[in-house]
Image 1 (cartoon, rainbow over the protein chains, first blue to last red):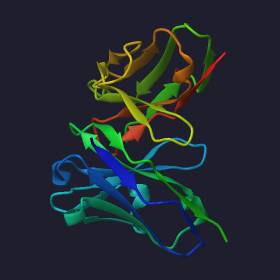
Image 2 (image 1 turned 90 degrees about the vertical axis):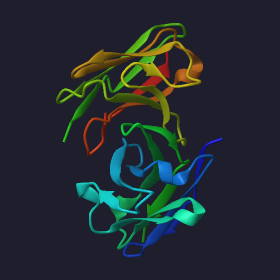
Image 3 (image 1 turned 45 degrees about the vertical axis):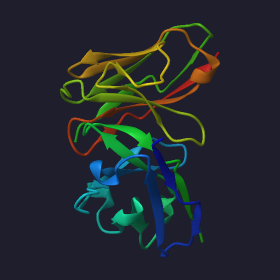
Length: 118
Length: 107
C-alpha cells in the first residue's frame, strides 16, 4: 500500500539547521511530485512548495524562499526538507504530501514536529 | 493568490444531525476543490476532490457540492468519529491555498 513515512521529532535551538525526510513506498516515486505543508501549533495548513521528483527541480512558495531547501534521494524514494537558521516561528509540524491530478493531496506523511527553543 | 474563506470556524452537532461547512474562493476555481478531515495529532485525510467526488473508503454520508466560488461539505448524519477539523483546499492555481478550518464537535 502507498505510504509516506517521515522522520522523527526534532528539538533545535534558534540558528541551528534541521533536515527531515519523507520516504515513499507503494508507488513509482518519480511519477508524482512531492509537496510540503506547514502547520504551526493550533493553526491551519500552509503550502510551502514542491519538488519535481523526476527532475529534482524545487519550487518554493514566497514565504519559504531563502532558508528552506527541498531535495531528493531518488534512489531511496525519499524527499527531504532542510531548514537553516531556525527561528522560533519555524516551530510547527511539517507534512510531506503527494499531489494527485495536479490539484489535491491523496496521501500524506504522518508529520514531523520541529520545536525551536533556546 | 486565491483566498479561501471557510465558515463556520467551529460548530457542534448532535449524533445523527446533518452538518454543512462552507468554503468560498476569492475567484472562480472551476471545481478544483478538495476537503480534508484532520484529527488531533494526525495528518489530514482526503474526503472529497473535484468538489464532489468521494475519495475511496470515505463513508457515503460525506458529500461535496458547489461551483464557481462557492462550495460546501455536507455530513448527512453526524457520527462520533466525525469529530475533527475540516479544511478546504483549492487546486486550480499555485500557490495552493487552504481554508482556515472548521472544528466540528459532538454536542
